[in-house]
Length: 250
Image 1 (tube, rainbow, N blue to C red):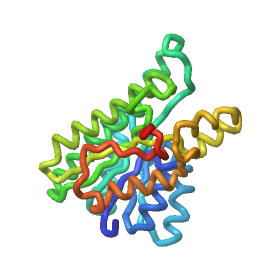
Image 2: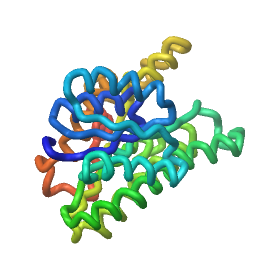
Image 3: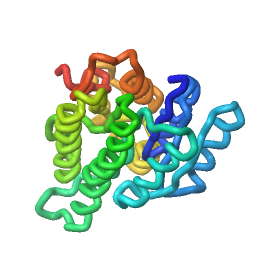
């Protein structure tokens, strides 16, 4: 990824933080976006100490102005935006659909769908203007392909991410912009660890469907994102790439 500038959303922890570390190792200049500036500082500090080029853009993907500012940071700081890993997401517990509060639905759809929509709307014009194409990776989930038992709006939202991915890939392929999605299975992020600390009995359910009988580590998901953001996947666009330990094969 040497010579490329990549924007990562949801970069303050979990898969996003792992991607920041891996992309920096592979030579990319990074713009890291998440809501909390202090959390971004904790991710960026060790990377900068090792010589990585990192700019921070604290903000919320549900706010178009924040996303526009993050994209502008990439161009102003590094001269281009060559790729993006639209990883920010939000979920909630498995409340039955008829008992779910409307505010939960709104928040799940805002972050997971409108957030990706906002990112695409501001990333793609910059890539079109450059004339050099680009690569975009959106984070979906196994809940984006089937009903997994996750809360219903999350299932709907992650299905929508795959739809946006396919539509964008078709619309901008002639301009050399590739758009793909990761279909991510259960991953041992900080959020997952917090959940399992409160309810350890849930772990068996998170790993039961995976052929490998374990969760992914965040870096394993980041490796798939790095591949899709690089020329190593040059003939792949509009794809939904499973990173689920074989969950979707059964």
